Amino acid sequence: MSTVKTHVGTPAYMALLKRLHFYIGLLIGPFLLVAALSGVAYALTPQLENWVYADVLHTSSQGPAKPLDEQVLSAQQIAGPDAVITAVRPAPGAGATTRVMYTDSTHGPSESRAVFVDPVTAQVLGELNVYGTSGVLPLRTAIDQFHRSLLLGEPGRLYAELAASWLWIAALGGLALWLANPAATSRSGSVRKWHRTTGLWLLLGLLFFSATGLTWSRFAGSNIGVLRAEFGWGTPTVRTTLGTNAAPAVADEHAEHHHHGMDMSMPMPPAQTKQFLNVLNTARGAGIDADKVEIKPGRDAASAWVVREIAPGLPTQVDAVSINPNNLQIVDEARFVDYPLAAKLTRWGIDAHMGLLFGPLNQLVLIVTALGLVFMVILGYLMWWRRRPVLARQPTLVAAWRELSGVWRCAVLVLAALIGYALPVLGGSLILLLALDLVLTQGAATARTADESA
Image (cartoon, rainbow, N blue to C red; front, side):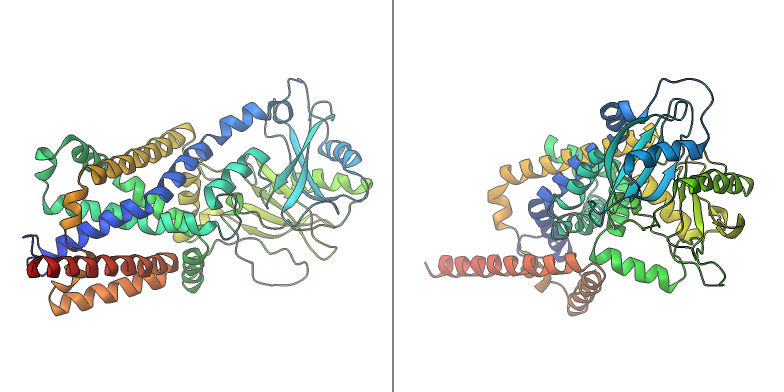
């Protein structure tokens, strides 16, 4: 690094880093606050859902469960003859209900309806609109959509991508500033000391938030998807076309955070509801042994049915098999043990980001990290407010960059261009940030000229 000094006696690269860290905190801080607080709410959704929807998610009935086809038939009578069953989730254990999801002409492209059935009595306990391919319940959907897009749809997703894109730079920048002068923590004021100490303790968690959050983002996430596809790191899923050797498609690990249109199956005559039990038994015989599973009928007569495990956490149970409903033969299978390492890491990262990997402990870690980020942002604004006169005299980004050697000026430009290309929202916001900084730089130069001529 260049050791050229700025006019305030600070190495140019340190002045550059300090100014960038300051801008991130000041301008991106509000987005980080919203993402962190809404993330805390999302981490608590399992408990909130169990409380809000207790009347349909749980039952006090005791005794042996009715056959699955009888439960499906009971739900179908409520849904109506024109309803298209898209998935069935049998009760995973005593006290839980069976969920039958269907669509009809009244549902939008990302909506379906879930009928909750008491498995012991086969009585319908209630219905709820659910969203996306994973059938997310309304409360989680509302919190998720606010966390991802501020309830503004696709344009609103830019806020979350902006926060995730800059968070890792803020975290690593803070680490670099500490490494450059670790003794400053002990002699600095209490606010700065708490800010630095908290950042060091939460560093890995903040980097994790940034990396996993970017996989859900619109632009950076697309780039990550292209990279994974290029290197064969996609998550395999089962082939469902009967009578062919077509290659399997790639699964969407983010389904619970996405609200895509549901796969449409054919309307099912009541007599065919027995297929759910037959297909499930076949899948059990093929090693699908998780308590939580989902059965998806074929889209048409030429499509296999799919039974997949939906039990996130450790041990990870997300195996899937496709089954020919005509002869109950296994068509294809996808086993987690056979996933590429990158796909396994992605699965674990997504589950951890959603608080599902380690259960309540995972939720606690997420909440502590997110609240720690909120604490750091608040302390950052407090430091800015107290040190406004000092900050006004410090070098701007452009001024600090100009003090670097020619080689390092070029290196900074190339690095910024590469990061901006990989993370387009960061790149676009960086241009706006530099425009603001250039205005401040020109203003500072004008003020100095006026002082010298006075």
